Image (cartoon, rainbow, N blue to C red):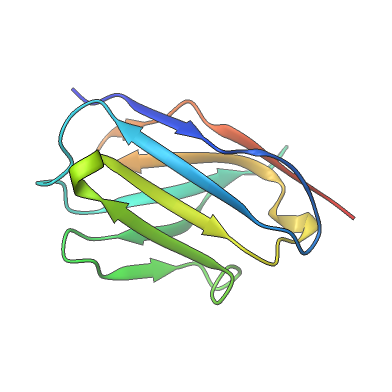
Length: 111
């Protein structure tokens, strides 16, 4: 069992930046894929980014070049750095590994 807790969401103007964190309740060293997803109101939950245990990353086309996922195994935490935010990035962001999900953190981008 793993508990995941997101933090770092908030309200930001378009063009701004936020960094989301996902803290795991135990070591993530052995976990392979860790990822971020987001869900806007009335829409399905969509993939945003993932990172493997070797550091290989994958991004949704909509965030490539703007978002960066990283992991810090020693701190049992992984991150999503979000730059050049757009109004359409507004959503609840969830972190995930295996079958475990965090509770979500709201990101709101104003125009």
